[in-house]
Amino acid sequence: VQLQASGGGLVTAGGSLRLSCGTSGLTFSSFNMGWWRQAPGMQREFVAVISARGNITSFGDSVKGRFTISRDNAKNTMYLQMNALKPEDTAVYYCGAGSRYPGNSYYYKLLGGYEYWGRGTQVTVSS
Image 1: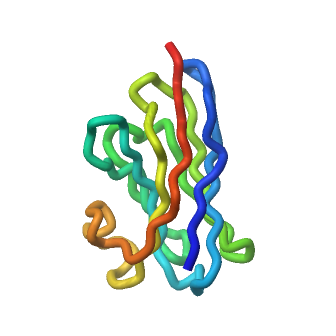
Image 2 (image 1 turned 90 degrees about the vertical axis):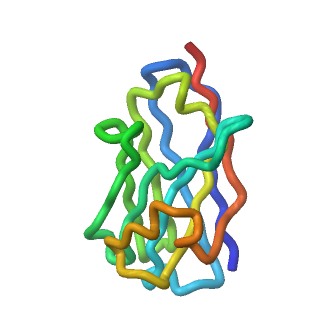
C-alpha cells in the first residue's frame, strides 16, 4: 500500500493551495481518508476526513470554513483545497487511510483510526 501527498509549496497569506493524495495497493473506495498536519515541534493535528463514499466530511476547528476535502474514487485520489491560508497553517501535510470504523466515526480524528499513512508534503505560508 502506498499513499503519496503532493501539491505543497510556498504561498503568501490569503492564498490557496490544493493538495492531492494518490494511492495504490488498496481498494480506495473502501477506505475513509484523512488529512493531518504537523508543524515543527508540534504534535500531528487532525485537519479533515472524508468517508469512503465521499458523503461525510469533518474538519478540525482551525480549518473549518477555509478548507474543503474531496475524493475521486475513479482516480484513487483525495484532495484538500486550502483557501485563505494563514502562517499558522505552515506544516507538513500527511494523508491517511482507514477502514476499521464507519465513515462518521470519531476515531478518524485520532491517529489510531488510520491503518496507512503516506509521506507528507510541505506547506509554507508566509506573512
